[in-house]
Length: 342
Length: 125
Image: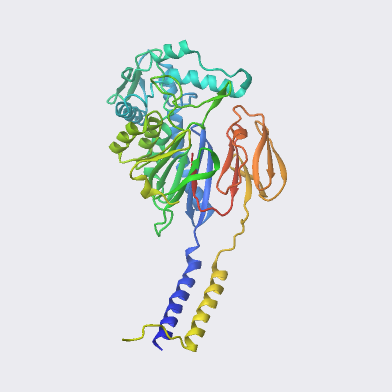
């Protein structure tokens, strides 16, 4: 009889569990995509009671990102604002009055520059422009794809001194005191903007700008973590791992992103400031870190460093990383294991 | 020494059987029906849904705009097979077939998204 009571009790528990199920399914998961920000794909994922409720949240995130997009743009100008194109165009001239968001970004960029021994250098715009132009031409006209002129690269490299980016916080101005220096914040700005926007965004969203992924809390009230897949560089349909993310950021730098071929050899977009050519250490580096801006800068720096030196940087920022070599061999920072789901 | 083995009574066995039958029945009843099981291909332009196709179809679709993309669905996978956009990023995305993945043509403001059951919320890389 006791056993029968046990069975009936478990049945009761099971039934009550089942009856709660429909209530838990109320919130559906939605995705919104925007193609007008930072010359890349912005994706927002979240659960909401209705499509309208989600779209309002996604719009709010979009509008906040748009402000940063316009300020950090080096290709286009916008009515009524001084952005980084304005600053670049005034190189060698007078200081330019800018929004404090630009002051904050460039101040952090100086910190990244110091911390990475100059590997993350947003004053490298003149060098990166040569690579950018050669890549664009090479993609549009593959038969005539060529590398940037070596002499031109070396000449441009003489105008990448971060000390010539003079910030006056009190006056809220930036001055490029080298007329040939140009800013290019591509290695930092997306992650940095995501971090700022995520801090003000609704809870429980997953925000990605060009693969700089940031979670603003768990995906539901039960605390279910987000599942982020890390693409296999060899096969985009499979994952190296899937990891759990509740707060904080994930970003991958890969040699397959923004690459072009010259005489059958691929050249990617992450340029080593010391050699002025794409680095050869890794196929991809994924960084997991509480701050999205730091994650973006670290993924670039780690891509340009051997594993040991990269690990030393990770230690300073409580960050974790997964490195993949050209051979497919993988290397993990000590704490990465704890993040892995599959 | 006490005999610790279980002695099932006929009633117990019936009760257990009842639990199993009920559990299976309830599971079938409450598990959400996968309406996108097998996956679907959604075509967005300027953020608006233009068309939706099942993934298990053979279909071609032309997307106009500032540029022109040709979309093809074959054997449960989708690709942009022709495009006159600068850069050609959409072409180099190749064939994709996993729910949650997408192909994007920024110049033509087009996103091809595969929807369906997926245990991954987002992919980096």
